[in-house]
Image 1 (tube, rainbow, N blue to C red):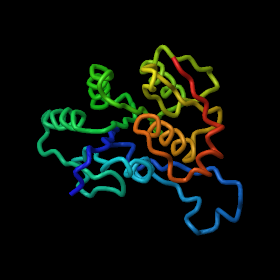
Image 2 (cartoon, rainbow, N blue to C red):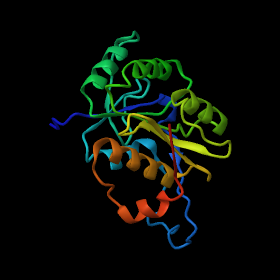
Image 3 (cartoon, rainbow, N blue to C red):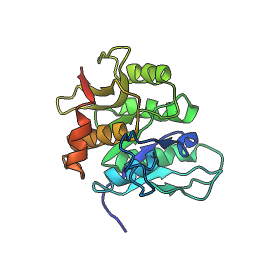
Image 4 (tube, helix red, strand yellow):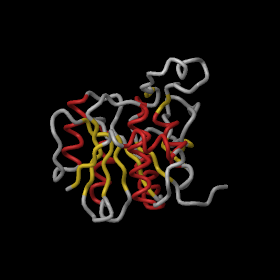
Length: 213
């Protein structure tokens, strides 16, 4: 029913269950109110990106019950039909959010995106299931023109309005707030809308460091 161009979410299926923890130091917030509840990347993306368009992902054929988050498209069969579906989604979407990994499927998607990076809006988000070293290596291959120090952890990367790559990094351990702030910053620059929770966004944003080409 939603005719807007979709927000496409590309990731490895094994990260669907990974939960992002919130860094909260106030014991009151830790009370069972849901204020400090961990969330999956799916939930973060659904909350932040739904104002731009319906959030869509390819469903894991081994698990036909979709989790809370992006609407799932289940592709039947064991062949390469899913690749045609992904290609069609990329051509129709307003923005693509991808969590890079070393899996064969995601690597194929990354190759497809590199060939179309000049005509697509792409946001790369750190994969919470990867080690810091693997994440740094992947982001350096995605944005080789952007330099960041060894003690900085990449959170997101995207092409800015100046057509140069921008990488958002943090020197703190990755947490739920890191992903919310980085994702909203990338969506705002790519699609122009303001984040929903401006106070929380500005409070945590100073911990996210932009690195540009």
